[in-house]
Image (cartoon, rainbow, N blue to C red; front, side, top):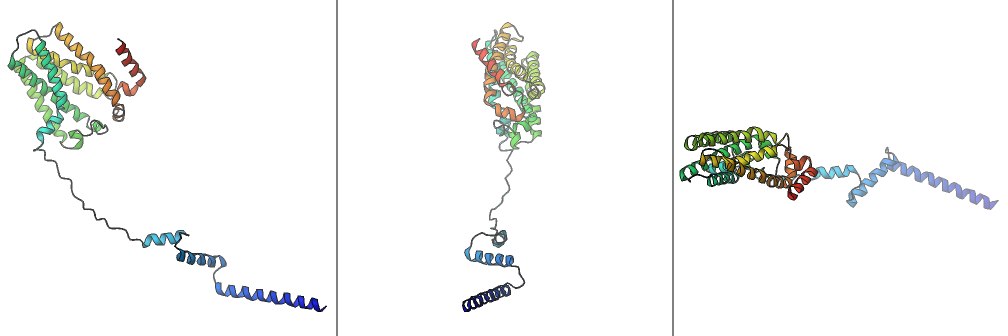
Length: 296
């Protein structure tokens, strides 16, 4: 019996000690719940350990950081001096390299024509042809300015970069058209001037808009390239014969492999700009067409 009494007394003492410890813990926590108290304990531990534990502490640290001041110095872009670079810009507007090739084909037509060679007429015919070509290229760039901006090949043209205003392009085209056609009409002959005017209209009013509508633009564009030899021939002889037509047909045929190779390499550019080239619309037929042409 004495043993049982001792065991009972021991259990009672343990229960009382446990109740006293629970009361002391509740007194320390106060009005907060045990979960809130644990959160406070974890937060205080985090502040001492510098470890990212809660979003609240991260936000506090982000607010405490100072935003670095912008020390960059902003300067206005200097305006381009159009007067000092006007000649260069006009050469770019006329596509001087392409215009030079057009003039060379006109010279070839004049030189191959069966008539006495006259240096004055030859020079006037060449200059007039070049001016008309420059006008056509200027009008072409005016119409295609928003599309040129989307192509890597043409994004640096003067109108796209804003080096010249569109009104400058129109004024330049008007001046070169009037001067070139007047030289061809009054100093060479009316037939040469008519060929130049027709080629100008064909290039700017038919070929240029057709590039975004149909692949037929390639066939019409080749006609534009085949007319300058006729202008040179007509400037020398005063008319057209079988020899002039053969020379023009040779140049017309040559332009297909030349332009097809160019359009194949520029497929991404033409696609972005929305140009209807066979290399873009039907690459399979394009390669078959070229392979058939080579076999022939």
